[in-house]
Image 1 (cartoon, rainbow over the protein chains, first blue to last red):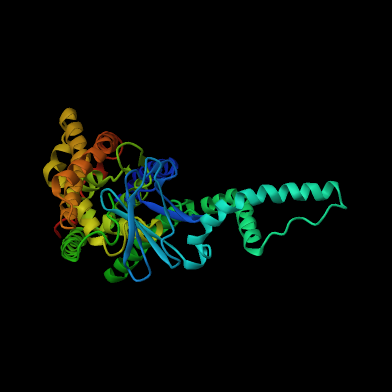
Image 2: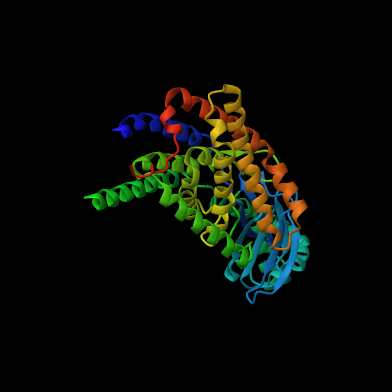
Length: 211
Length: 206
């Protein structure tokens, strides 16, 4: 049977295939990921961890399909924009040569009153200092008069600012962990298994047909 | 070399699908089913080759191996590439199911052309001829594939020459790499397993 001799030759090809697969599994596909930071949305476009999409077209669509804004990614594959409205935002990245992908940021990921947050933040700065001083003062002299009153809106802005600062590294880490990435060993071996399986099924059906 | 979903217009998709179906039918009809393992192994090689990434050029490119498929499989490259692309689309999310036909045609048609244009020369006993023919097959299949891809993209509103130039520049390194790879492969097979170089067509029933 010629196929027996064939098999060892085929084994060589399999080894070659495995050698090919052994080099870093980087994908030929464009990925886009976006996350919210303060009142801005950051978009990251990349082919792989080390290959960013440079000058890719980023378009942002609202829930009704209307285009809200567009822009191009910089050398780092990044693009950021101010949140245009609190709604589901579909971010479409078109890279060169027919590569395209999209990512949707849901409305509930966006901060409440995003448009209003930045002026509040500016106002909050002096208050923050004053608050810290008065807190220190009150700690040193317990008998001192009560800390100057801070109205609720300012307190809220203060807390927002502090939380933003504390949470930023965490948000970044979560964003990075959530970023989609290329296929892993499971997908590769799964695909090879499918090919062998398809071959098996075809051969089985053929051999039944011959009988 | 995978075109993503939602980029091409419907007529282009339909033409691509029609060519892919026809090519696959021819491939399956001509196939010698005793040689199916060989086709499957080359399909596997094609399937994983897309993960070998060449980090040069303005975009990301990877090995395609359609030249090698063409030389070794002839028309059977169509069904082989189709299966490889389906699995890449489902498992890797490369390309997509609606662009399957267009992508198959862009990669398998050059393979078949290489088979007819260079198949004989690559099997020649003259070493220099064989090496250069297999190099040309490896590099040329990618060039043709890139041009087909550019042609498909033209109908989406991009003008041909800028796209074609971009595709060409992006695939230049991979063309060289594949040319060398195919040349080495063919020489290796000639010495170790010459019977693998026989085309996998069924012999006319005798």
